[in-house]
Image (spheres, rainbow, N blue to C red):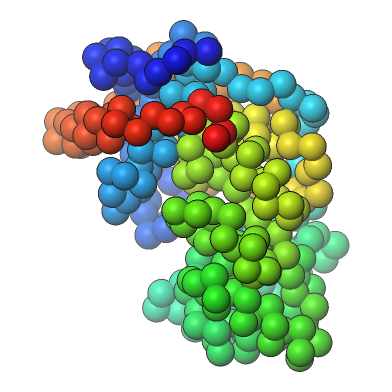
Length: 339
């Protein structure tokens, strides 16, 4: 295990910037750009969304370095159950989106999309239930509601049978209030915290505040598999492993986390490669019969060339790598240990 961060020159020499088309719009984009790093032990992915600042992005670089230069902890399982993901599409498009995932036992449905209303959310969730009457359904609002809207929305949506609601409101205090009001109303929906874990300076505050029934953990935003394992252990709450719209390289890190967790009570949100029209590997990490088998993700040279970002976009990512490397180099305490 390396004692420190690889040099900037080493990372730049190993960097590939790609631009991949999506099948459907997700987070408002139809093209996903990412920077891949080839290390001595494998490939890592550095893909913070453009609006993330360099400090927040430094955790994503730490995760990519862990994957390529450190390797992953020992696996406790070799198959990871995954959910399908339905973006905020019109209800009539739900069957086509689900068809990309094959057989699944759980589905995460995006709700609270800006510019849409609750009736559209209800229709989308109902359409998923019509296609998959026995699947476990969970909704993800990405903090898009306020407390009153969340209580109203979950009061209507739970009639389709919800396993949990992910980040219905943006704040930790708000999550706690939604939990309290749902319990008082007898609405049986569990609350999962996502942004309140990965975007907080203290990812354990949501657990201490009693604001969630479970937590969603993503390798890249938390700084790597080992750090995510440490957060789950300290939180003492059930965990769902999810992705950040990664290629198969990033999904491999998510699978490593799911494989290393002592307990894996929920299907993971690691099936998002199915939302891409193309991937970087000839053996994409997509679900087969509701699960992904644990295996390596090795980008294909031809695909890296075909989808290579050029000109200003490549320069933008390499400049970002330089800046974020500088941030990470100045704060390496516990970089690969989870401390």
